[in-house]
Image (cartoon, rainbow, N blue to C red; front, side):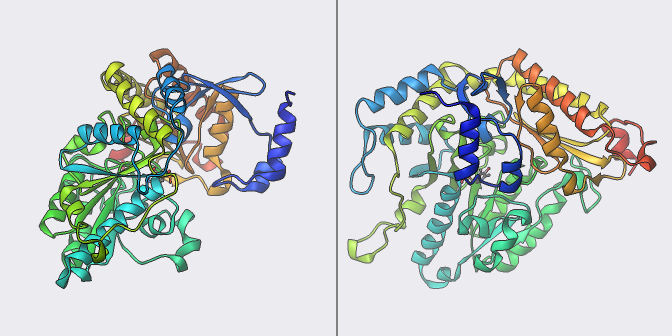
Length: 474
Ligand SMILES: *Cc1c(COP(=O)(O)O)cnc(C)c1O
């Protein structure tokens, strides 16, 4: 018997607890119940259609229910749904590993599976830690990590320990291990008063100093390449990642790249590290790995790291970590099919004009008075709204301006999930030109509608200026 939307909504509010959600507000507000997906669209139980403007939290690549992905799951389901990866292997898990190694930076030859981005990073931390312990001698003193301000590496305790988004992490501080936190580029509010095209990544000086001082205690550096997603889509200037890589090599510490968000084409190349030809010691992958269909993650590493774990059984050098659903065959089969689609549908080639169009259209958003900054890394974009653009005064959290924009977008048939005052645009890579146009039109109108009348009288004389004059005036 078909239930009505109201029943689902009521039952949800009675029994469910949603992530990163103030449930009192959730319960007090009307909620969409999603029933179906097709291509770039999601449909609610009433049959209303929405463009999935954030790829279902940055996961979807080829659109919802892509026939090739549905087929891959069906075909695998006809053979095997799951068997353990502890003591056994499986066909799809092997095939996917072969494909991943083929597209990853060349030094990465080993694949360790898990189920989500947090564990993919957690595994890299533990592998690096254990690697140095097993090197013995002075290396066993390497027990700490360096990570970046505003970093987001997931929600497990190890990943949170490296995280730097205070809003998410502060309350758990007593539970966390200490790590060295260093400055990540924040060009919109550069504390050094530099410009991204001429700064020569000045803000890495702190990282360099910390690394020099503590290299004997540090196992690894963890970083989100090109762009920090959850921090509010903060883009790093060119040269940032390469410099980090060089410093890591010179100071004998591992480099962990968290490409959970940036992986699988989001920045225009398969992995963001390709833009600067950086080869990390660990590469953490999740979100887009399965094309946005099933939970799957992978931590890739080098044969050098791998070989340090080889020994006699009784040396107990094994990597003692694993999850019950490690290497799930359905997830691996669909991930392999998703990688095949990149080739057969020329996903990355077709993405290039869309990235250009996105950049072009985003430039017109400067026409909106409360757009403070526009950041883009390939097909990942963030529009930061400011109460007063000239002086970069942010909207107070209580105004929930990002949320207001998302609600306006819903009325225009678009699902968005903002990060504070930053409106995030990250549609499936497969979105068509006309769908992308509609998404951008809706985003523009929604920002306009939500920010109108939000400024105080004293600021009403601030006129819309383009980026150049804003930067020049300060
Ligand atoms: C989403 C995200 C994670 C965490 O992934 P989950 O699958 O949510 O655990 C880690 N790192 C980055 C960069 C992310 O964007």
